[in-house]
Structure formats: structure tokens, C-alpha cells
Length: 332
Image (cartoon, rainbow, N blue to C red; front, side, top):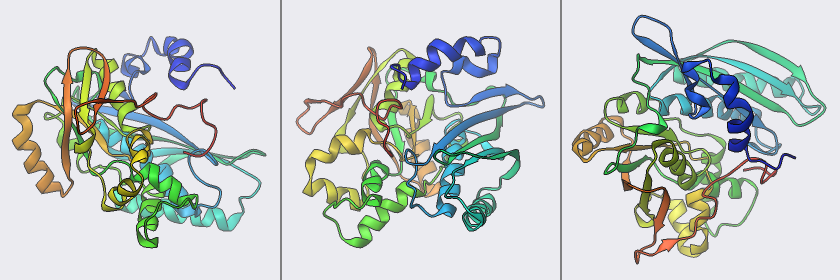
């Protein structure tokens, strides 16, 4: 197991390999932006899902397939891109049989119809180890208009779509952990973990409104820290303003110690973005038109790092702020 975390590995070993590709953005973002002419940029992103890390062996294969596709669509949405096609690589473990594959393909067909994308190619192989799935997804955005992590400006509001914490709590529910909620609430949380809701209608409409953006995959605090690091700034957020679902509020009321898990656990796949106060009205209209709640949770400021304030204004300890590979081998 490497002693470096994923970001250190990328910076030390893989970033130099991308030096001659301007569109790779120094491997500092979630996707590449490649010029394809006609005033458009091709946005390319890739993500892998590993059995036992990103999904549970008992998860239905159709839902695994849909999660695999959706986490990549979420990256495209956070860049402001409209998804088009994807490539898929499957390394299937020994427990996979034809019925598993049929259900998996059915799940992909369902989401292809919903999101207007198509499979363009890939590779399928066998492995004696855990099933490992990978997608390279592509989308388009107006030339030079892709939303990036490094565009935040001092004074920007920090905003997030939807609700935070359902992914982390949903993993606990999917594992059968007692959260002190009824069966319907537990099932709702588990569903949010297994089936993300990529904000593909919202993302493109944030172009020209947001200064910086990324999706919340590894934890709200940790992902905001990525925006701050890339932008050379800091941020302060108020824990009480972070939007929670009714189920998450019930869990938190009974177990306040789970707040850090909610703010750092990840797997929410909401869009985290910064925008100036002059865009508050436009964001209110956008929220109404898309039916997606948008909540301002803090402010970008000079400095570095992310400060999370409690109800009394004190600073809360968020640890490393989010999930990091090579530090926790169990499912997220």
C-alpha cells in the first residue's frame, strides 16, 4: 500500500506526464478540457468504482451500473458540460454471472435514456480480484467556459445544491447500521448512497454565474478545500447552514456526533460552487426553474484552508476534511 495519498501520487508522478497537454489543466481538476473546434470544448472525465470500496458486493448490479455512470455525469455537470458519450472498462470478478451482467446492462440502458448519453466503446475482462468498473465520460461546453476549481474570488459566497450528508449516512444504512430512524428513512438514505442524482440540468446553467465549481464526492469540507487550494484562498462555512434532508436531520438530532461524518463523508454528488453576491438573484431564479435547492453556506476569503463554524461561532475540528484513498480500504 503506498504511503502517499491519491493527491500526492498524482502531483508527484502523474502531473509531469500531462505537462505537454494544455487541456489536462495540470491534473488539478476533475476533468480535462480539450479544444475540438466550432467554439466548443470537449470535457473528459474518468472515474473507477471498486467492489468493497465504492459499492457493496450485495448491491443490485443495475444500481451499481447506474452509480458508475452517474458519478461521471456528476463530474461533467460540475464543469458546466452537457454529457454526450462514454467509454466503459469492466474487470469482472469470479462471482459475476450472466444474470448479473444482464441486470447491469439494463441499469445502464435506463440511465442512458434518462440522461441522453450513449456507450461509445470500452473493454471487458475477467479478474480474480474484486470487480472493478471504470467509465470515461465526455461532454461539451462553450469554448473556454468550463467551470474550474481555481476561479473562486475573495468575497464569493460558497453554495451547494440539494442536501449534504445523505451519501455518508446512506452507506451506514446500506451496511445495516442502526441510525435511529424508521425503515423508510433508512431506505431513503441507502438509496441516496447507491444512486446519486447528478445535477446535469443545473451544471450548464451555472456557466457565467459561478466562479468555481466541483462536485461533492469525497466530502463537503475536503472538496471545498480543493477549491480553496486551487484558487489560493480560504473559506469559512457555517455548519448550521449546510442543507440536510429530513432523514439526516433526524439522525443528527439523535446523534449530534455524526455532524463531522455528514460534512466530510462524501458520496453526495451535489455541486459545490462559489459565486459573487451580484448573482444571488440569478441563483434564486435558477433554483426555481430547475427545482433544485441552492443554499449559501459560507464565504470565500483571503487566507487558506476551510474553517467550519458551529452555532456559537467556534471553529470545529474536521480532521482531514474528506475521504482519501490509501487511508481507508473499506467501502465508503
